[in-house]
Image (cartoon, rainbow, N blue to C red; front, side, top):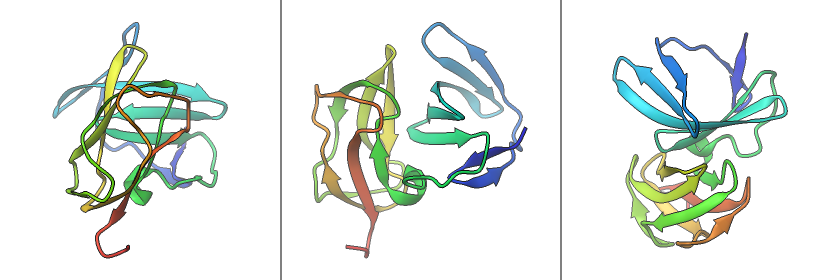
Length: 145
């Protein structure tokens, strides 16, 4: 089956195994084991994995945000609670830096900066309950604002 990420066809070229646990997925790769959350949303699967959020489609679609990795826009992949906010609006961040943590389905999922940039919008606050697709933060690349 073909999968689409951000509207572009992708192929899985890495060997991995996925085990279903009661509250999360356990992904075993040659580089280690990692937790992930995944929920089905129509023809899509919303995935939170290693600090990044993805929308995986089984048919080509136009992505609303292009995924945080491309756009720097972070939306809650599912309802949950913000358990930590580690940056402030206007703060410079480095690629991979943890910016906030969302707890959903008893699992904490970090959101990491996709690139070096500046936090231009931060609507998430510690303890806040959020709904699926709610805007949490926006990181823009340095030099774009």
